[in-house]
Amino acid sequence: MFISGNPLNLSLNLYEMKTLRANQKLEQIIETVEKKGLAAPSLVADLKELREMALLEQDPLVVKVLRLTYEFITENECFDVEAQYEEDEEGNEYPIEIEDQENLLYLLNLLKNAEHKINREEIKDYRSALKLELY
Image (tube, rainbow, N blue to C red):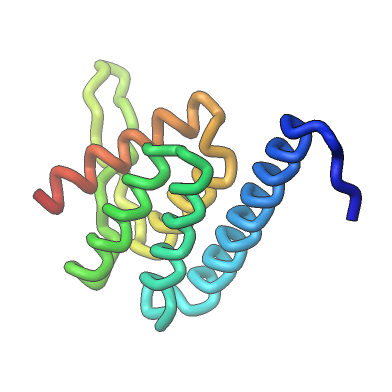
């Protein structure tokens, strides 16, 4: 293992390891949901663990949406959150009907690249929709 004498390099390397670990956990959660759906026995615990990783990475939006997601799943035993909308020709927005499993997978895949501007906006939409549903 190479350890740089520069403290800045060391901290950057540590950050990369956390991100890699979080991405591996996220991939594992996605695989589990693809195979077992929302009925996966460890889903909520896995989302909580991923949230702890996001806390270390200091991304408040991801931390919040993960907490709201596992709270919603725990409370409702589904993920029928209306966070995706389509517009008609007149500019009216309508929620897209999507199955629970696909809806959760879509959110989890957005989290893979949470820093991307468009993904971030959609994650915010999920956060808002989850807050409305839960509170």
